[in-house]
Image 1: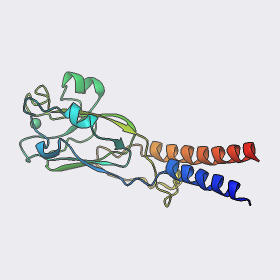
Image 2: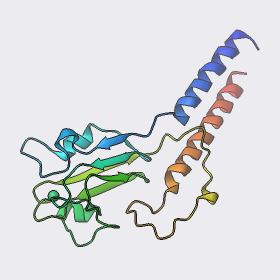
Image 3: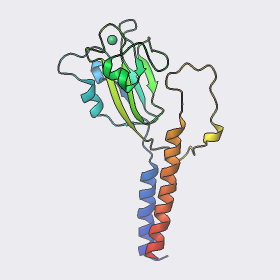
Image 4: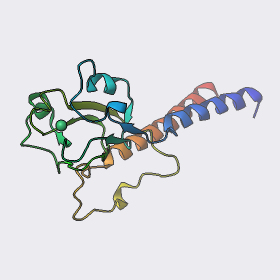
Length: 183
Ligand SMILES: [Cu+2]
């Protein structure tokens, strides 16, 4: 192998490794020091969320005093309208509350107390695909089924694994194509 091919392969492996990703799963404290509350004027959960990068596998921490607020996962329509009677899964009543993000796409959270949601205690986030972990190859067929689980975020954890597989396959395809092209 000459040095040119060696360096090319080296670069390609770095690219493939970056695509596979090694980024750690991140814990996001919602609202930072403000926590999960009715925001004062000048603070917006939209602005906070815009400065975060959410990935499948990350965790949200909602800091609030038990009995003063809660967290409900809701649909986009219920988020917009502050509809409180139709939560997805169990409302989290105990603070601080932790929610693991299992799926990509848009996720919506509101407080169901009084008029808190109307007062902008509501959060919308957009979750990108997981960067995955090279040491844990996804094996969707062996995913254990949880019985009696009450987690509001339990359904469907497979999409992030599927996207990791796609990215991995894409990396290998890209690698082969470029090698074939140059040699
Ligand atoms: Cu509240």
